[in-house]
Length: 205
Image 1: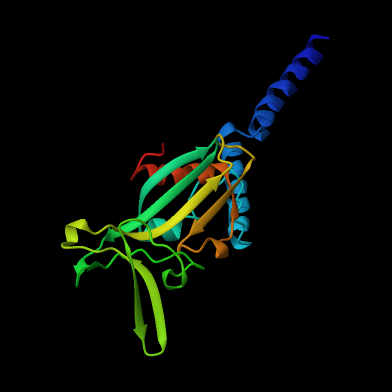
Image 2 (image 1 turned 180 degrees about the vertical axis):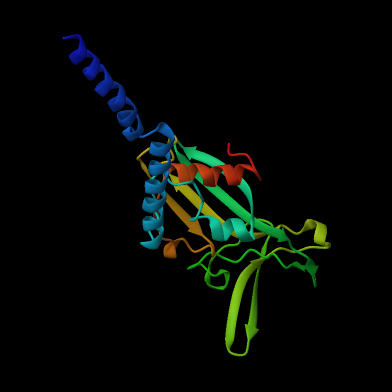
C-alpha cells in the first residue's frame, strides 16, 4: 500500500507544475483584453462610427474642427446634462470706422428686408457687381472696441457619468446657420473629454 501511495504522490507532484503552467496569468489576461479592446476600437474607426465603445480611449472628434481653429469662450449647462458652448477667434480690427468682426445677420433675416440688428450694430449693404450682401456691422473708433470674431456654437446633450452606455448628442455649428446642423451620437466618455478640453480654456457654469 505504501509504494502505491508513494507513486500517486509522485504523479501529483509532477502534475501540479504542469497545471500551474497552463493556467493563464493575470498579466496575460489583461494583455489579451487590451488587444481585443484595440481591435474593437479599430473596427469602429474603420466603419466611421461616431458612437465608439466606452472601452476605447476617450477623444473629442465631434468638436475637433472648432477646437483646432477657435477658442472656447463660453460654456453653460443649460439643463441637466446639456451644455452649450461658444467659440470665438481673434479680436477684430477697426477699418474705415467698422470692425472686421462685423456680426453677420442670421440666415433668413437679412437686415435690408426687415431683419433687425443687435444693439450696438448697424445694417450695411455692400455690392459686388450685381450681388449685394447686407450684414450687421459694429461701428468703431479703434480696434480696442472690436469684438471677438465668431467661431461657432456647439451643444452636448445627454452627458452622464464615465463609462455610461447613454448616448450623447453632439451638434457643432460653424456657420451660424442652425438649419444645416446635424447631430452625431457619441459616448459619454468622449463627451466628457470634449468638456475637459473646453474647460481648459473656460469653465462650464
